[in-house]
Image (cartoon, rainbow, N blue to C red; front, side):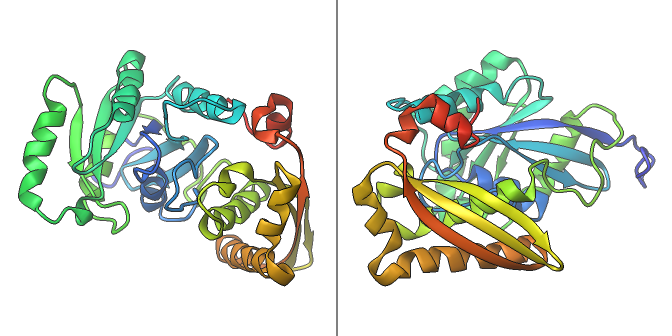
Amino acid sequence: MNTETDTGQPFRAGNVAVLGRPNVGKSTLVNALVGAKVSIVSPRPQTTRHRLLGIATFPEGQLLLVDTPGIHREQKRAMNRMMNRAARGAVEGVDAAVLVIEAGRWTEEDGLAYSALRASGVPVVLVVNKVDKVKDKTALLPFISEITHEREFAFVHPVSAMKSKGLEALVKNLIFLMPESEPHYAEDEITDRSERFLAGELVREQLMLRLGEELPYSTTVEIEKYELDGEMLRIAAVVWVEREGQKPIVIGKGGERLKAISTGARIGMEKLFGRKVFLETWCRVREGWSDDEAALRRFGYSD
């Protein structure tokens, strides 16, 4: 790729941390900017547990979007503490940061995320997401005015990440904040994570979508086998739970729920990887894994 754009302007590329409290649409925003599903999405808070890089390449520049777990106050378990450290650590070495909030709502956790970003010293862009869900659009301007009063933002963008509305102006301003640079990744690359990692995330996404309110937070996924057999991917996934009594909930009557989880994940893998997938899925128990730092690191969690 040429380091000069078609307009004669220098190409720009850099790192952008995407922060906010849980469930404001950070992963949906990253996916929309990248133009592909690199971060799993569900209506439940704390769907994102890892730092993940989404690579968004445009004619004018390349944005390396660091999707992070939501910053939250409660840090009861080792996993919560590790997620918070991962989110805060994502700001180190970036060229700009995006604070994602929900239109019409500002909470103490939004304030925590803002404070973390301001302390980093990088330019902060405020993204007011989910504007499509605001019935009274005249309330948006007063809300934004209130949020930006005595808080410093480089730019402010009302968007709907779900509907990909308002993203062009956001991309333009984010690229403006990036240093002049050659692209860091090839034009067709969308993430720095392996397909093996993404396969595990797609299984976990189905757990978040198909289980009850609490159980998804007691589950994690480990990919035991990832092999290319001709044109087919053969993948073996283990769903880990924390107590024996949780296994029947994941498996379901006659194994139907685990089968549905596996089928949904396989369809997502085939779409993302562009090839046929044979997926086998089991459920096993590891007592208290979410409060065990050694177990967390074994399962790929890091700060």
